[in-house]
Length: 330
Image 1 (cartoon, rainbow, N blue to C red):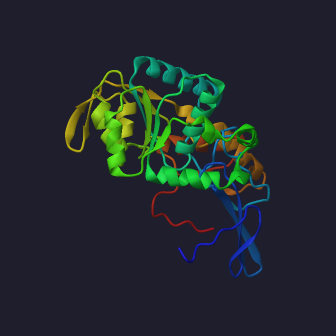
Image 2: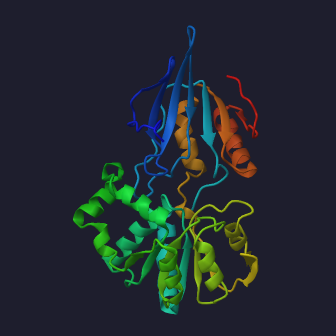
Image 3: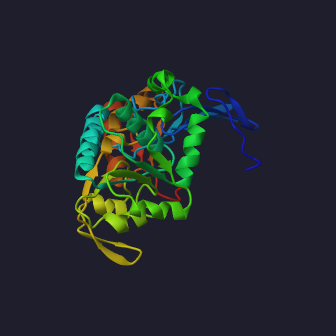
């Protein structure tokens, strides 16, 4: 950690002799960045761009991803959702509010497997806005994740990175004032007390894919109850418990125990922190004119292959799909 140092957006950083890097807003998480790398080899200069994870346009809290407008020799582009677009955010928000209203009426617990950085903060901002506008009655909300609590503090320390919408909302009145029913549980004993809290209440807990963490304990305690709602608000990787729930499993194994799934499971894909196909192509459009070599990363086969087809059809460029351990020479 002593070797790590912060760098500002949009300024050159000398990495090593003949190597310079620029970090640009990626709109994915607080401080996330795409990287443009210039490398001098003798009299030749090569420019390589790494998208990193790109966020969707118009998502709350963060500014939109900034595309790279300088020419590039090679581009490494993520493809998590390269084969399709997300549902419009406004539609997802309306569905989220309706699901919460029904869950409150049913007096059940609402379990939200939550990534500690990004998704937890988004959920809290949306809940605060619902409560402020009177669109939902105030009910208990538990942030059951020490990492999410720390990440939220860091978010609050950097309002200069917020988008205009959140800046204006927070300027009217601090959002924390609308979250008077929020309880942050950091210790294991505090987490266990949530089991004794009757519904309606909402529990934000990690891990986001239900493959570890405190969410497993809450799922074991509540999945078998028909009044429980499980809201899936992020990507669920193949082989995870979260993926099993999304695919409609009737029974799951948690800590070696077979648990019946009687809770209602809802997937809200429009909250993803990853850009969909249209936004990925819009970001790449700034670089396509320089005819770079294209490498698609960070996607399952259907995501990479779908995006590769679009790049080939739209730009007449062949995108490579490198495998783990493959060496690429530029």
